[in-house]
Amino acid sequence: MNTKYVFVSGGVASSLGKGIISASLAKLLQARGLRVTIQKFDPYINIDPGTLNPYEHGECYVTEDGAETDLDLGHYERFLGVHTSKANNVTTGKIYHTVINKEREGAYLGKTVQIVPHITDEIKRRMLLLGKSGKYDIVITEIGGTVGDMESQPFVEAVRQLQWELPEEDCVTIHLTLVPYLSAAKELKTKPTQHSVQALQRAGVQPDIIVCRTEHELTPDLRRKMALFCNVKPGRVIQSIDAASIYEVPLNMAAEKLDEVVLAHFGLDNLPQPDLTKWNAFLGKLNNPKDTVNIALVGKYVELQDAYKSILESFVHAGAANECKVKVHSIHSEYLNEGNVEEQLSGMDGVLVAPGFGERGLEGKVVAIRYAREHDLPFFGICLGMQMCVVEFARNVLGLKDAVSREVNPQTTTPVIDLMEDQKSTTIKGGTMRLGAYDCRVEKNTLAYRIYGSELISERHRHRYEFNNEYLAAMEAAGMKASGRNPETGLVEIVEIPSHPFFIGVQFHPELKSTPEHPQPIFVSFVKAALEYKASRK
View 1 (tube, one colour):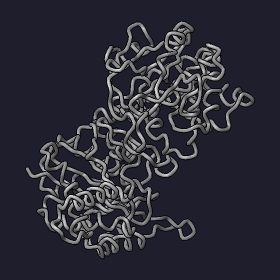
View 2 (cartoon, one colour):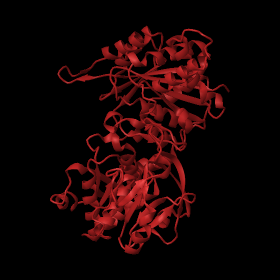
View 3 (cartoon, one colour):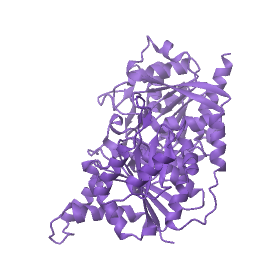
């Protein structure tokens, strides 16, 4: 069987959920036994989102092989339960970087380098790359941005060319649009969808399927109207109504027969029905919690939920595993201090101190950690959160009052967190951190070992600074234990306080590997500890 390609574009407005629709379709196809992957093509000129402020683009999602990618790849992995890679996220910056380097090498034999064919040829090459690997039956490609955007035009042109070059039965295009509801008129409006599809058609691309994001049910008449004026076959106007949880969208798409329509186009309509047993079991627990816990998420980007998207989703998974609802309370670390910490955290059942970069808000994180440590409140620190729990312990237990990370004060005489040795000569910021999956050896008879049940684990990293091992002996003598270390470098990966009911900090990013069907162990244990803490206060 030839590899089949699905192209998903969007119109009318951004943030309609192209990533969720792509992931939901992929989940349904995978559940039928097909090998599926998803890739994201982003129109911005950055090489990758690694240097972008989270306020600009949400969290930076890191893959096993160390790629800094769009947060939609997190959705892909959470829905499919399989790893993505550097090849799954392509930006305009990467395309132009490759083409310009080829031009400098003389690869174009003196030709004038142009958007068509050179840029579009490179886009097409990357669109087909995963399909040519032989690993996948279906490759779904999500095109970032909205149709009509100037920066998206080369990607749409590449899809137009592939629609012409590939056999008709090997290529499907899906266009996601918005059908707004005007409350004053009490009716849904289809004109924005018609205009969006017309913009796509003017670019030479005819969608095979239209998916309509809507707050209200689409009537058969509205569907027929959109099918007629958008030139798609009846039955290929799909409703994507607002859902209580993103994890319900695959079931909604199955009810709308999106997967069946796609498979019929491909000539693959003899496959078994999707097996969603585990997915439905997860949803059953998610929708029927027996308890509730309140978790404080202390961070510096809390105004934008997408900045901590994987952490929030990991709490959804861990909550379902514990049959409880996790209420996450975002607390801005920049405004947290000794004067208000009691008011902010006294009603919480656990505290997670989030990752980040830079000096802003760090002292608020230290205050939150001290409160959790001194009040036996379950604590979980991730990356910078782990580093700050080391700083807090050094200051308030070891008595090293000027203890700090060298990231904050390069001239400090007490750098309990220091720049990694291989980072000291690095001047280029993008893609140069310690990135991707690394092994960690976990010491037995520790909280970390009880959580993982294994001596050797692998987790993903994204950092430049590390625990300074010169302070390790003093830390351990005072009660903070390094329970996990990299077997090759000795880098401290996990710290904990054995005398505390639940206090753990990790240098890596465990949230990046949590899925509904396989929730991340630390999050599951943290939520369980929060439940126990809540019960102890009754």
